[in-house]
Structure formats: structure tokens, C-alpha cells
Length: 251
Image (tube, rainbow, N blue to C red; front, side):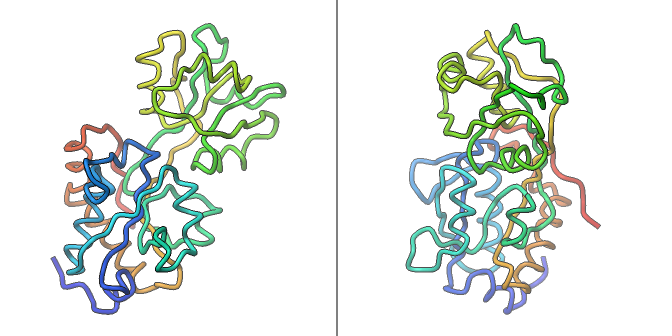
């Protein structure tokens, strides 16, 4: 392991502590521990390893969804939402304001429908009259907002363990978009619904920092590549009981 340049440490942890935004809205990447600073999952493990290399403590800044993380991008201390690094999916809207690494994990975005629905592939959903529920400001919300021409998105919060039948009726939707692993868990407990076999996108989960922190951003990119190549990311996913594809190396 090479010594981290002092300028990179200053960029990534200017106050002497690495403030890491953790998005608990994506359970594949982050899971709550017994305390606020006991986050679990691959995102938390990467943040701890980065802090160890920088020689500073890590402080986790908790968010319930990706939208909150992005909205706090401009927050500065003493605002408790302020962060130095974040774990978010790469999207053009976000990339205009965040310096991203290459992805470290790839996750599929797909749909849930009622078991009797005639829809079988993701390409069939973009048509007039189709209403699709999504979590507001999620990566798949941003992607579908850009790409759908005819279907309508209904944005809101989908709490863990929510009754899909109640949600579909209340929101008057024919489908729910989301992360495949989350949707599989819903369907396992609610067999009147099924998950579409293919996907509408690869959600490219990455680390990011402020665009003005160019030296830190450069180090962060090399850090992510090392973490993928060494097996750190794969091991962290396994430890947290999650199944996802480690992103390929970036040239």
C-alpha cells in the first residue's frame, strides 16, 4: 500500500475527519448497525478502509435515500448533513456536481408487476397509460425520467415491508421500479407479484467527492480500482450477506 499524498488527505478530510455519507435506502450497499457510527455493508467498509489509509477517523453521515445525499452536496460544517465522500450511483444530473470514481458495484434496475400482468420484458413498459412507481431522486428515477417517452412515473417513498397490493391500489400504478435485490425480497413475501426477468438499466454504484477537490478525487479513483482488484469489494459484499456484481476494472 503506497503512502497517501498529504494533498489528497487534505482534500478528502479537510477537518481531520473523513465525513462519509451513507445511503441506507440501498440495502445492498449499506445496513444500519446498533449505533449511528456502526454502519455495515460494503459502503461502510470502503469508508473505513479509506479513512485508515488517510490516517484519520471516519464519521458516518446517515441518509434514508440517495436524494438526500445529493441534496446535501453543497452543505458545509457545522451543518450535520455535510459530507466529504459519498456513495451514489453515477447519473448525469449528479455527475455535474460530484466527481465520481468508476463504479465498484453494478446492480440491476427492473420492475415488479402483478403476477397476472401480460408484461414480461422491460422494453414493454414505455407506453401510454402505463404508471410506474419509483423512489424519488433514486438512480432509477433519474434514468427513467430521462429515457421514458410515454409511461408516467409516480414518485414517493416505498417503506420496507410495504404491502404491494395496497401500494399499487393507492398509487394507481401497474408497476414498481427498483433494485432487483430489493424487489426479489418483496416478491418472496408477496407471491401475487413477480419480478421482470430482464432489466432496464445497470445501476453503477460509485464513490464521489466535491469536484473542487481534484487531488482527492484522483486518489479516490485509484483507491476504488485497488479495492476491486484486491477482492476487498467482493469480500465486503459477502460479509454483509449481499449478492451483487463487482464492477470490472477501469482502464
